[in-house]
Length: 323
Image (cartoon, rainbow, N blue to C red; front, side, top):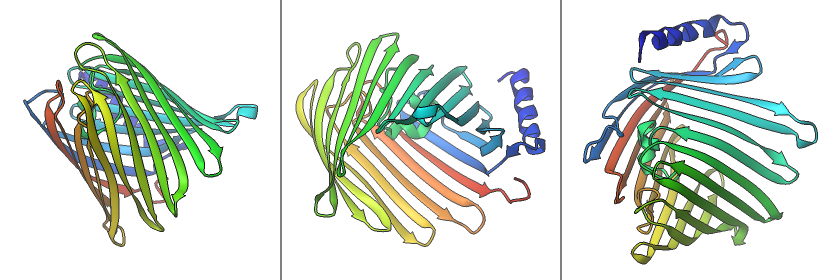
């Protein structure tokens, strides 16, 4: 980054604690790494950052993340629009060495009985260029370069125990347009106390990446005060025909204040994200800071490299006198 950008960052950081309207909630520090085969600049081998989160400035809550290779700013605010009720607006922006940048403007709220959301997305690279842990993500498709996107979503309560969530998205990249759809029908207490979920997922991608469509079913096992467990089976039609898939998400409280989690997916018919994905997490309260260790890996994509990422972070809740 150039000297002017760094000067502006340090002026902003220095000004936060002295503003009477500012309310700093947490401070944190992270260190991370990402290894890819073949090696690529899209997966940074080393990263370090310091953060301020949930800083109140008037009616807006802002956050800041600063590292030797990046600057990230976030802000959100809730506004009231008469019969529409509260609408939450969120803005994210990030600049990384390269230079490469991303921005996201989103809004969410409840309209009648529908929880609606919408977002405009612009990015100069795939998600892991900004967050290496995204190598295991099931989100924005891997299009190999700059992208503009519109992401929509709605959650509809069809009955007391029937909920439908639909999330279509459209993206424009140099190679062409991409369309993505995720839909989940939740049947609460369909199997005794357990929840049954029915899924429809698909993507239309430009060039030789390949399209796919998939159906899936998941069972959510509620465990009272313990984290839920989710297991899913899929069948998808892709470039190589119909193939099976599986997903799982689990978490367990080992000790008071200590939680481990695991997520995994094998969906070989997909080319919008890495077909094989896995993530592990460990969070622990240390009596002062909270510790978080996260590992993520993804493989078997036709264009994106196999990659493994890790991040270790500490978060402090700031004392009342600082707030």
